[in-house]
Image: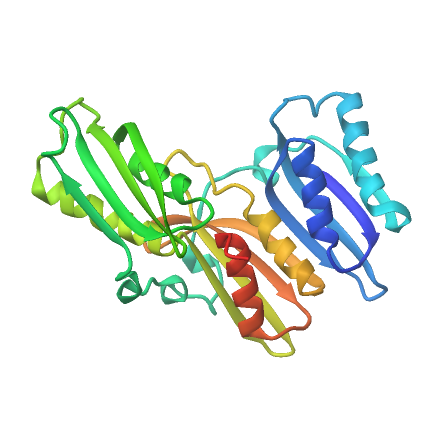
Length: 291
């Protein structure tokens, strides 16, 4: 766990998150709190891809990197090892203990908006593979969203082609097999897979802004893979978008919850100012790579 105390300023969380990313530290959870005198106390629960955080050298390197980013505004920085139950555990919590102001409908998907996404399955093109053809609007993480969905459905990709069609559109052609090495022949399984891919590519991330009286709360949710892995760099993109809008973050939280029988990673960020529609549009643009 990284404990950071600093003077508050716009873009602080993004700059710290970027520094941690450069150090190859993965943020699993963050708790942000501000004080009336303009200071922040941030708790970052991180894991190290190098697996060296138990060493004094690695901890000193981390604090020095953050100091170089924050400069004189940094008051203190420290790292300590914690037990999984203190923050690194990825066990999801039921929505019932999430918030009475958030329901399953908060992150519902408008299926009618997916008319521009086409997913078809063909068993005639290849003698040994089922071919999945996808026509859709390109976005950042398109291949990730496609591959994680196929992995969760136990479909193996042998090879594929990606073609840019212009005007932001693209085509994916994937040659796949079932786990048993055979083609996907069952029509019910084909329809289920097409529907799942269309849903996942339509809205890979959910972005909502809720009015909390004088404040605004930004909610961003992304589905967690069956393997337990979350979507990479979401926190970095969110804080970058808010930095561009010159908005200060009052508090922030990352947790996992079960919503509509699926596990979601939910980012809750309380802002002390800003226009809801503008915030939602900017955050979504950055997350989808449409900036």
